[in-house]
Image 1 (cartoon, rainbow, N blue to C red):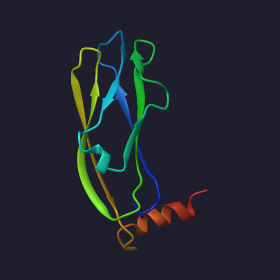
Image 2: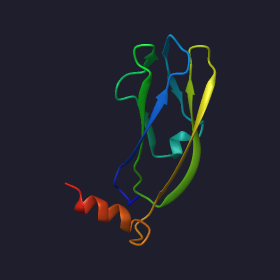
Image 3: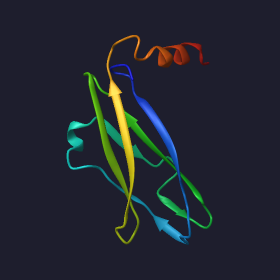
Image 4: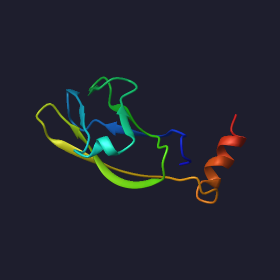
Length: 107
């Protein structure tokens, strides 16, 4: 992603057998050094009435960096399900030419 521009990835969590479950997120211990945040745009509850739950990971950095980390999704019993997150930020035009092309041509 270009420096100073937020990039958002959305994944869907699928329910596999839970009646009702409220998910929580655990960021890595060194997350204060990483420019990421996690949100649930439709709430944290998943269950029989809601079999698919969107999760958004947002990243924005003002300085060049690259990272790979894990974000843990926790069920009510404390069991963790890990999501690997990889990001890179710089201002080199060739590394984000596709991003700029899509951003400029999209309505």
